[in-house]
Structure formats: structure tokens, C-alpha cells
Image (cartoon, rainbow, N blue to C red):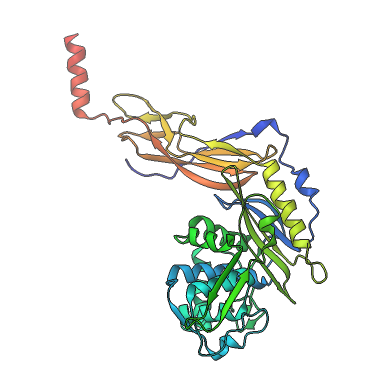
Length: 389
């Protein structure tokens, strides 16, 4: 079948639960300390709540979730890491490793994530990338692969930094999407979650001369049911930051907080975390937005033999967690009529699905019937049939 530009736009609007508009009054009433904050659906990445979520800000040690996932994906946990002079000179918070010492990569990963040791992060980066600069290139490449809108990495530990390309920064939305990748999409997601959930970990240097115990500083693990991962952060420029994930009733919620207070407001991030996670859990439920039974108008067929219309269908399904005030709108973009022949499962248009008047996704529309085109043989047989009758 010849492909053509589809001219007719058929609009069908469905308002879920008969809500009027999609004004989220509950979200408007949220009181947050953070300069930027976001709550996303862990399965789809859809933003459920945002406050300046696309504003670029420094993110301190929340950076280390990217360092961890790259180390897990590109390194071997039993690798032996040799500490450089540069790594050993990182400022607090630090494990206290010294130049020339050796550690298993696995042990340094726990040091970095549980107690946010900056020296361990640099040693990891140098081992995986060859240098901090090359590892930062890996981080930025991953950011591009994830489609992040405004993220730039300079350091593997999140210390405030600036180079010729700008400041070390991200946005709340981008940071939440990095966490989504780490816990939902990465082939190393289980290893990532295992490290994030470890409360305490003991290890020694490779020669067994020094031993260490590191304890998880993500206090939210024991403040809120269902926490599966999280990372804190603080620098003078970034303020207190946090990125975390909660799983409840087979639904995953991810938050990111940037600029959530400065000393002496260390507890603000826990207050904001509780507020955002509670908001998501209490207001969003799973809803079927699209299924294969979605009804579409038949399309007329010109010069067809078997029929003058074809049925059409969408071979996709979509379920989202949604609030009762949110709206769904469908726009079917397909022609008034088709020219025979039309073949079974030909793509004949597309269905645009809008959530709260924003395009969410586009799904192909296919023909459910086959219609052959009239030809000389058809006309000849028709004449003979009428003559014999």
C-alpha cells in the first residue's frame, strides 16, 4: 500500500473520573524547603510533581550514584585498585586511604556509597576510567545516552567544580532519571540496590594491614517503609541534597532534592523526602490508559473488491500511575479514506496520547482487514456473472 501523509485529525477527549480540568490543588499546597524538587514514576520516568525541576544546580555527593553504576557496569568487584597520590589528597569526607595502598574495588564502592568518602570515589574513577578526566567523560556520555537535558559532570565525588565547559551540575529531574536508570534499567541494578541497602560493611586493605567499618548515612532507610536506595550530599554551593527511591505495592517512586537547606538545616531533606513520597503514595494509583480494545473509526476504501471499509487497531497497551484529577486525551491521525489494495497489518496512521494536554507517546495504527483492488479480471468476472444471471 502506498504510504501517504494523513490529512484527517480525529480528536477524542476522555476525562478520567469526571474530574474538571487537571488542577492539582494538593500539589499546590505542598510545602518544601528544597529549591528544586521532583517526584517521578520509577517505571516510566513521568514527572508526578515538580518544583523548578529543570533548573540546573550543583548536586554534591548525589553524583556518586552515577559513579557507582558505571563502576559496577565497567569494572569487576574483585579488581585490585591502587591508590594514587591525587586520590589520597581528597578533602573530607574521606576514608583516609594513602598513596600506594591497594583495595578491592568492591570495598571502595561500599566506602563511597555508605559514608560518601571522596577519596574512595576518585580511586574508583581512576581505576575504571584511567583518570578522573576520562571517567568524567564516561559519566557525561552516559548522561547523553539517558537523554538528560542539563547535566554536566566534572568530578566523580560531586565536589563543587568548574571547567571551561561550565559548572558541575544537574537538575532535579535529571538526577531522578539517573536513579531510575540505576535501580530499574541498568543490568547492574540489583548490585546497585544491594549496596544502597547495606547498613554496615567491614573490610580491609588488600594486604590486611588496615581494617575499616563503614555505616550507611542514608538515615531515610529506617525512617520510611519501602526505601530501596538513596544518596545524600552536601557542599557549600549545593546545600543539602538527596535522591532516593521507595517501592510500595509494586509501584516505584523516585525523588530528587537540590538546595534543600544549608547548615543548620540538615533535617530539611528528610522532611521534604517524607512529604514527596507520601504525596505520591497517597494520590496516585495504577490506571489503564490504552489497551488493544481501544475503539477507532473504520476507514473508507476506494476501488476495493471485498469491502468499502477497513477496521483499524492499536497493538499497544499503556498503564500509568495517575491521580484522579489528571486527564487523558487521544488524537487519531489517519486518512479519511484509503486507496485499495490495503493489506492486513498495514500501518495506516498513528494515535497520539496526551496526559494533562502534554504529548506522552505516539502509537501506530494498523489495518485489521485486507482489501484487494478492482482490476480488469474483476470487471470481466462481474460482467460474466451478471450475464449468466
